[in-house]
Image 1: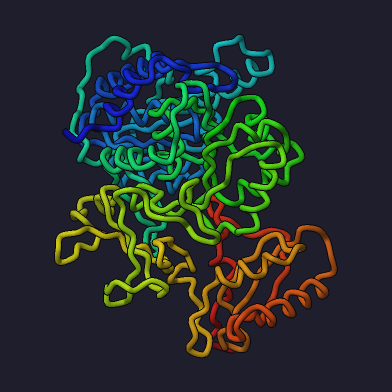
Image 2 (image 1 turned 45 degrees about the horizontal axis):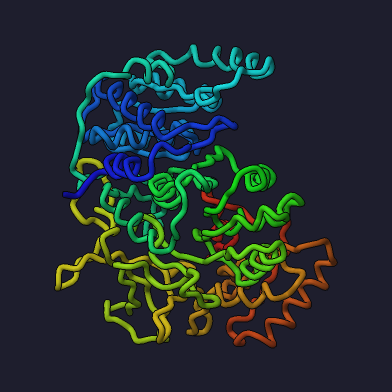
Length: 542
């Protein structure tokens, strides 16, 4: 039988026992309480008329409430529509309407600006608070804050406090949905076409990924090690890998509602954090913080990075620092996308190769195809395509949703995700990412891959970040390179050194003709570099 994520969690508790499943603001929450809260919340959601097949919007940062609400909805067959908690009121309204959500979870400190929209929609609003999972007495300052915050919540017409929802549902029966093949979650990503897409993942997609990650791990005592959960739940990497895998495999979750390098490093020092996932900019900021180094780095055991381009230089600097303090942990580069429940290839202790995004996880097939969907031989660059049990159900499009929308099925009935990413495989099966198809720059008929340029320029010790994009000079296409510097220096000198280095180390058509020094790069909600904002726009009047 294909089980749900809730049942997978429930079975794991039988195996791992009643360990501390999460720590919130210093409060240790055992798995028995988490499961009790999941069951109570599920019963409450049922009691307000929400049933299997319906959708409920989870509009929360990375908190214990986000974990509990996901499993509670999953238990009763309700689809969790997980939305970025800083989405605009208009964006939230659009998402709730598109998914026909019957209720919404919000965090009190972010809630007030959404009152008009939620009241207009007329759906129940479950108000969560960080103090819900704090067992020690509130300080006077927090009490004042709670009082002020409560006034803003008076604007909500159909609201219930999270704690009241739990007490209302405690001990009451509810439906228990058991079909793991059905849609469990709506996640919102860029899609493989560049347009905003809503991805449908089943419980089975998420559970299968957990099974594929297990061989990368090693036995450990439940509750003895922690996972610092920095990644948000609205992203598959956060939901499936940072949350679902560790809590079902004996790790204590340390949720961070808002990332700060200093706060993250303090958590590494305070707790035995062995499991850490993030995007490149997160690791970069943590390493730049003066609080990063220390003997606590010896605890790191499973450290993975994905979501954006990760330079080999950053990998080496991170690993050298861990080694300096006697640690054996290593930062490993991986690759994935929401359409396959996140990670599908990864480097690890057994298989690692410089500059690669690793080998496919067990049971996942990754191939390189040309434009005619023919498999290319080792060493040839083409589109990265993925098949396996983690392939999404398809894209959600409201009443117009059709099965397998966004999934290519070949003549043998195998379902594939066409990633929109370019790369190649070597003779040993390691996969290499060379860039997005839509980022590829064509100069005089030659294909230019931004990652090749960025990797080269990052060898210069004074360059902090590099992003190669489409540029134009008098409406003729060229490579434009944007960089940030590690320390202040004369911009003309920096540009001169970059140009000289590129001429020596890159093919002529790959050399940037425009170089811009910037203080920082624009970023997307997932902290990826927003290369579209850096690219030049074609001006037909020039």
